Image (cartoon, rainbow, N blue to C red; front, side, top):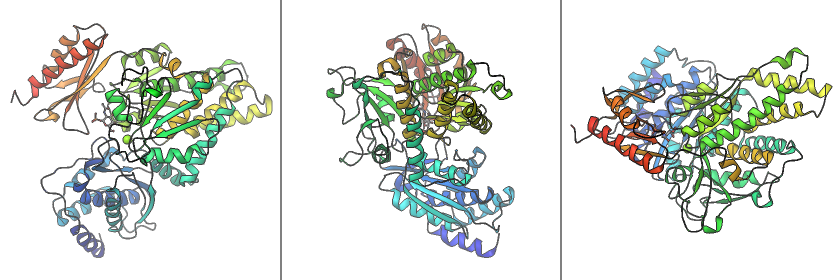
Length: 561
Ligand SMILES: CC(=O)N[C@H]1[C@@H](OP(=O)(O)O)O[C@H](CO)[C@@H](O)[C@@H]1O
Ligand SMILES: [Mg+2]
């Protein structure tokens, strides 16, 4: 590394000393902490982003400042890779090391070592390019400045500030730029609205949709998603969307609102009341990469009927499967129609067991990965069509390039032979879905439009949708332990292989409950062990979760140490 670059890094990083006595980790979703602790971390992630871009032949890298559904005083930072997906896992340990380097000298040493090891061309022909985005948190502005300083500490690196955007918007823009297609926010809105319109135009003529089902009310978590949806909805025909908790009416980000709150607490978010009984409603999270639906069942209670990520996944799977079977139906003799696209559905152990049963009964291939979008996305990308969702509402549908090419050529062929046939409509629907649904990452806005289009296509109310299957009662608990890393899991986190004996004890408890299932794992975002249990009744699920939490405490808790 050249002398000038070294001294530049030393002097620049001296302005961003790391916080004392805190160890930060890149975790399941980047770095997250109280915003006051993050100046140095975000600065250093700026450096990492620039290096990552250089490593990837100067492709565009994304740097997003958000703490998603955390409280407003927290913030965080994460990286989007050139594909628009999450930062390569291979770089996470470097991110950890950078964030925790105690002094400018240590930091410089780490960078020199890593640049050599990874063969990063610091003096290459093209500069590093980084797209920056942030959510609506007040701390975002100064953290953005820290990120810019980090980026410019790598000589020649270019930062492009996209302003306040949703996390999935930034990922989408990174992907689009690297593909060399139009990549502005307006392009994003135009792609979503035109592919939505395309799906609406292809709704079968017999499909009936009740007048009362037209209205959709969306809880924007007082964050960026509500703001953006206000813009997007003006570009949409045939949808009556009312946005609440858009952040303009004085509400606090994620406080008693948003997808995380609604999914975990199963109660109405602020801004909703007994007047909303029966209305189809949806909640976004603080950076709009999660989406859940719900309805208020009665005036007398604050409980909601939740339609979670598993059910959104099921709706998508039913629709996609229907289109594929239309495609396969008739016997064209051309070679092209023999292509058998592989459809895969990816879940985690938190998926409600009833959803997995339902999907398997549909004849679908269902696979499991550990928690964390990076694992789900990676698995989904192995299929021609991979649909993945976490129960909490993060998910999307990814299409392989070869399948999209096949669809395009199918469309051309069918246009010349049987234009307007059912087959061609199915092809056009699948192509529209691939443009509507964010190919980079789970996206609440694009997910919402796809749900709306499919419900209209099917002529389904939110009740009809809910009835696809009945959720098994479940319970999630958190247990504080001395050291959460002493729990080690296998088989997509369904089995605890350490500490010895704990899985046998969990099995013995679980066996006492009809339809019982329970597992434990260390959280990647909080310092806790998570306990999940489901069983045939809510009381049984609660009781199983409590017993397993006690086991965790006995094996690992403060009381046993
Ligand atoms: C049970 C649960 O909802 N876990 C969440 C949570 O991860 P943990 O590793 O469980 O803390 O945050 C992740 C990032 O947002 C999300 O991907 C994941 O689904
Ligand atoms: Mg989020």
